[in-house]
Image (cartoon, rainbow, N blue to C red; front, side):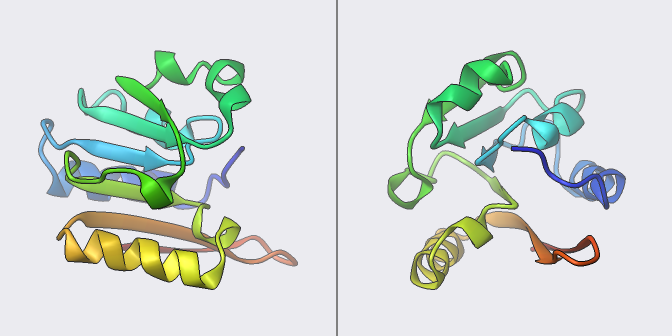
Length: 130
C-alpha cells in the first residue's frame, strides 16, 4: 500500500505546472494515499478508486480524497476524469489487463501518469507522464 518516495516532488510539480486546479484527478489503487496527500493542497477534484476495501478506513482515504470508490479499475467509468494516476498499479495486473486499461485511457483521450517499479534489487522507478 506504500509507494516509493522517489520522484514525488517532480511528479507533483509536473502535474501542478501543467494542469489547473479544477482538473478532475483519479488516483487508481491509492493504497495509503501518497499521491492524494501530495496533490491535495493543489486540487479540489481529487478522487480515488481502491479495490481492497480495508485500505479505505485503514489509511483514512476519505479524509484525503473528495470521494473514494470501491471497485476494479478494469470496469470503472473513467469519463468524468481528466487525469489518471496509475502509481504502482500496472504490475498488479496481467499483461492483457494492463494493455486493456491503457488502451481504454488512450481511447478516452485522458492524461495519465504511470509509475512502475522496474527493479527490486535496486529501487528504480520509471515514471511516464502523458
